[in-house]
Image: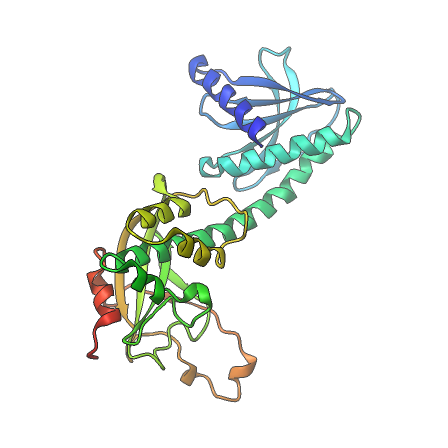
Length: 323
């Protein structure tokens, strides 16, 4: 994908100086109607152009983000092309992956292969990439939130905070001590609910006290990646080897963690008898072995304490008395 990224970068640079026109670059991949081309238009939108013979129909596609249209390229003898492009700028990196896959597929089919047929495989592949992105983003977002809370807890004592971080070990709650437990839920700024993956996550039974920590995140170019969070924690005194061993159990091996997040706020909710989470006691004992329960919890209107500096979180895990 590096080559495609470079081609798009070169086209983007040319488009910025060209003003209103689209910068087009020819790729070294032949199709029955001519070589493949990539382009970047005046709005910095990226395109893959597949030449189409005169009289050949172009099957259009109009998805939420991915489009296939027919057009003629100005300045290239009005070359007729099928134009694959993405209208959502935040999905540009994924679109580059898609183009890279399409270029490889078309090149492998040879100059006589049906480039248009390969192009429409892009729609199915795009859906697969979207699904992977959603799952990958949730994993990275969740881990980023836990790492941020780990840093807050570890300001006086990184090793004690690491020992309390039990989520990667498959424990019932993300952070646990003899005095309390914390469950971390990272969510975007616009999220009205947090997902709860099991009935045990927000069931205070068996713990002196249980708190829910909501970390509001925003995906922004100036933010930190998961690897950047780890580097920050290492600078704060956390052992890199132990951190990386913990994170390996959460994220896929050899996966790239390129999403960048900033933390907007951290809030602590006490999961007491009045807190509206589900408990094991809510389910008849005879039914529990047969049920896998996942649900969403709306936090709007529930009492919480600001925990941006981590003081209330540290107190929650270390305070001996119970309110």
